[in-house]
Image 1: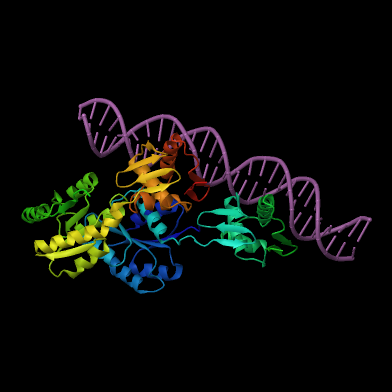
Image 2: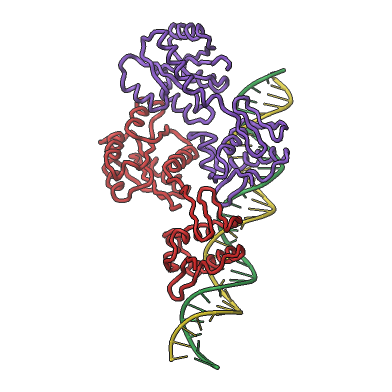
Length: 229
Length: 229
DNA sequence: CTGAACTGTCACGAAGTTGTCATATTACTT
DNA sequence: AAGTAATATGACAACTTCGTGACAGTTCAG
């Protein structure tokens, strides 16, 4: 779950600051744009995960920007939440028509804003894989978050679960500690490479408890490999 | 099947009366609301089987109301037929997008209106029949809003009921707090994720009182799972 | 109006998880 | 066989996540 980037398009600096504060408070990264042109540049470069768009912008209107974004294949899937003045029904309708995902009327509480942001991001979030991975007597189901070896249930911590899932879908190949950190932990985390060793050990321990040995193999000087023999 | 209740949301009293007359003539029960606010109150209390909604309302628009209803888990399955002025294509498109099930243009014949009402009710019928869900000794009947475990009756609050219903129809799979909020509370309900924990606890409490344990399981770091094992 | 039922939020402690280190063990080289 | 580099392991403190009881705001029937 990498931190989502949110672009704030708002011409009033004071409000923009407020938004940025709230957004960052909740652990998101905030980008800022004061008008539609600046916004478009930012969007092309940074491809934010969500756009918070004030409907009343100087020059090119917010609705215009929304239309343009929806027309471009690269940006048409970026969700938009629009900020509108209270009770401006026409704007709401036009906005939703132009492809906004949700709207919020000023003034709004930080809590409501955050709730809507999370709701929209959640709705866009990719579905978790439904597919059951099965290999060498081990069965792993991401949807139910269960692992079994020869029918017996296995208990795994979150990290060991992800690690095993990765290995089961990348059999036979050797991965360095750095690669495993990228793939299983995420490429943004700062963690000692040796930490991988520890989790490999924990995974081995649980697997051996179920009579499965030598599945995770050490390749001295290179990394680890998941293999059936 | 009990007589269906139909809510008429129409600001023009004369037209509302006409609608009520026609509806009641056909053996349905008619509720009335003159604006969106009154409508929302009625809906929450009476849970009508169908809503006949004029698109042009004073204050908060019909589209607004429709969206709100669709966002709330309790009301999202209530069918909506919208009344539009002749040939207002934009409204039709928006209306269907917002979740209306059908539309009818003014002026309309009573016969046409009734035909559409019956059609929509019929279409929803299979869902309304709400077969009893039964699993692992628990029986849940959406129609009567009752739950029993091994024959013994169980008392559940509305939210716990919906939560259990969802779990019973989605066994084994793990759901995050966010997903449960979407599915059980509704998309646009803004509630802290931890609130889910509290309702899970309340549900567990009641179930354990009936000798059913470990049905709702915690999957640390991921969410919750309903499972018989 | 009053009391009961229900809901959402919070604070706190309990329980589980994680990253890191020190030390032991192993594998390889010479 | 000894020396050295790489890996395994056990311990542990910091950190997250979860369970739980309390509580205040609402709704609603009587």
